[in-house]
Length: 334
Image 1: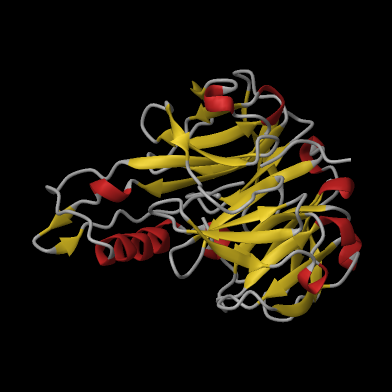
Image 2: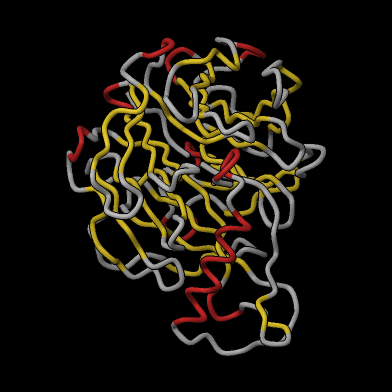
């Protein structure tokens, strides 16, 4: 997982993260490409694990402190910090994106009725929206304090059952993957009112949709958990276009994101790996994170972040690499 407009988050992530790192005293580096790190939530080991953004090699457990309990979705907030949802612990934790240090509990256990949080996104209003899977609804929390603001999408609205991912699209509306109805539902981004089934139930053979993102081409990409594939839909009409990416050992497709290299990365939940595909053609490139690397066990969400010690500076200004893409997740939940 990009945030605003289909989690097209990366330009914002870079600006905020780089500003944060400058504030804590990042040494000046020569101008050049900015190295990145891939973060992956490891559901069964209660970690966020880090991997080299170029090679996929394990670089260590990223987060420290703060008891993660079934970590699932991740999102970089407007403040540049990393927010991690505890699906089992029914809470949201905040970490320093640059260091991985625990900053505190953002949404306390059970606050506002949070129960099995899956997908998360910060909206255009700066608030946090959470796919509350157990109650078949979307909750909203204050983006600064973490306090509950109420239910944004009411239980079962539009036929929503077991929401697994959530994002704001280019049109400003909210898109939600409805796992048990095999559809992508669309809601008014301001009011939460149901608009339509953007991707109708089972379109293109969609089976148990999990992670969703709008790609650089403006189309919607959906990880089909039982499809073991990523399906592509027209970003304006929701019509099925094709099975964009599959193969290479992908088993239980969950989280997905377009990387800073423009390629598509997909979490393979049932064999604990991350698979990489060409971001334009969908052709298999290969396994990026090998099965179980660094103890990875049930990978859910994926997020790329810049390495804090290698932010490129040019003439005293930050060299910002902007582009759009995204993320996110998971193993079958009963």
